[in-house]
Length: 308
Image (cartoon, rainbow, N blue to C red):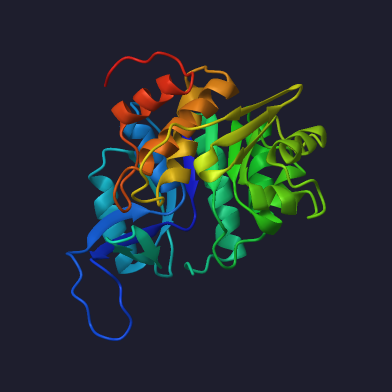
């Protein structure tokens, strides 16, 4: 498994009992975590018992601190050096409500081309599942994911893409293996005038042959999974939400983990829904925990898995 993060971040999270405008407020000691797109996917894959290699583009002193955090995770990383500074993300969690109150470095077109060439070499070493997501940093051409999708297919690997806007519209022209998107992004991809029901959107996207599988995630209502001739709805177990920060990344991690282990798209997506549900029960930028994921997986019709 290979994950790609062109726009990682140093996540800084703190809490207050209740956020009030005006006066200064004392926050808890900040928590530092590696973050941004597929960085979290690689972290969650490791938690689930799998191994992945992650490519990150990082730069500056913030990039150095991010690298130091990542080096302690025992995950395999490749670092692409940037001239500009890696971004940080600052989140304040309000304890009373569990609500969150929240640009990346410029990468030239030439740098983007060089990164793509490097990715080709990594894919040759790992011709399996590739997870790429999130918005592209400033300066990266909008067709970056489309070019990645084309080379991934040519090299015998399978791309799971999770992005939006013009990069997504260009990528689907090359037909990646799986597209994961939310309800609004599905409507946008259909031109904004399609039927609003998620299952119909997923079916229409499959009928357009945009991917081998379409997954429309619905937040606390789970996900719709559509493949040629098949369509299912997967509902998560009821949980108490503490933070939604890592849910999407946990979903993609579990999905990719399942596919890499030979599961069907349906079973891998069920594992993804279980992982997302497990993630929202955790604090701040914490991701899913394996035992909780496996317990939720069994509740929603997944495979029986051994304990961690």
